[in-house]
Length: 431
Image (cartoon, rainbow, N blue to C red; front, side):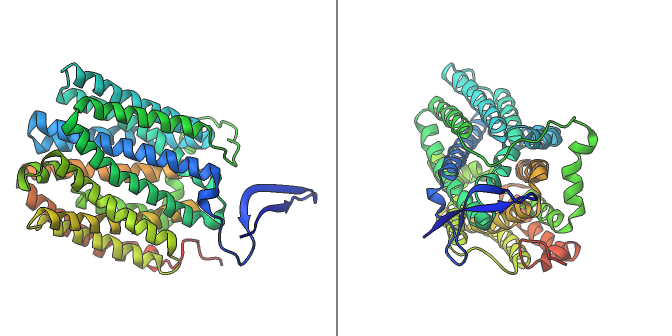
């Protein structure tokens, strides 16, 4: 396959070389894995994803061991939600006006320090529920700054003509890490609870260091003053673009009501009697479905009817949650969670690609901060909702209600977000 460098002409007729690797018309897109900056980016995604999933497994299992309370499992999600909502306006501004590599590094350094504290506390026998919640808050703070910069940097690394493939490939390797992460976390928690937090710290620190070495085709703009207009511009941009608004809100409400991952320690320990390794497998099952779907979308990317496909995927997400609630055994529950992960990936790829393609680079950090805030909020508040509902109604009824509510959200959203439902491609219609 022949690769070339695209050459443009500016208004004065002088050559302006675009150093991004492009393709000859009519030939296949670049081989992404030969793109050095992209492969480094993939390592960052993999290491950060593994660290996050191992940390989630370790904190969830340790919290349930210390308290035996589903409500405390929900509190973990709540304390991670608070910094995301508190800082999302600032994090988007920072991502657009500072070097995204350094912002990502600082966020991952904060996460590494938080789990290092948990490792020291576990080794000294001083781990408490309150300390777990406090460090979950710190991890949430680091993530609030990390995600907008990490997610918005990809269009500065690969050419626009392969961006959908790059997003699907990025999600694929990240989900591969998410498959491995919970299983690794389950083994390490059972083997040595101190080691599990130390592994997280090393992974986050290494991801941050590698991020610093990635070459990006973007010079940070001048540092505009922090004011309400610039900070709220990401919110205003999404509000003006009804398709983007529909995509992020559909994801918010679906995951808010349908997310059952906070309750998986209860399924593992009390319902299926499988212990920490079984918990790790349950946590890994959605990621297994996600990676299979991501690989499929990398090979055969969606190009038409993306709006209707997104609504169908969210419907399937709700159905998978219902299947988890009525699962007669451990293997059936694993299959249900694979369905949940696969369907969620379709929705995520469509939403992320729309946000990336429809947002100018100068706005991408602020818009992605809003997108990340909504995504993380839906997961963390979904965890809190699931834990609270399980404490009130029981684990199985809570999951069943969540799945049914998700399907109801889809039915209502087809009317409210009609522009999204009718969207045929990722790009806006040219008039």
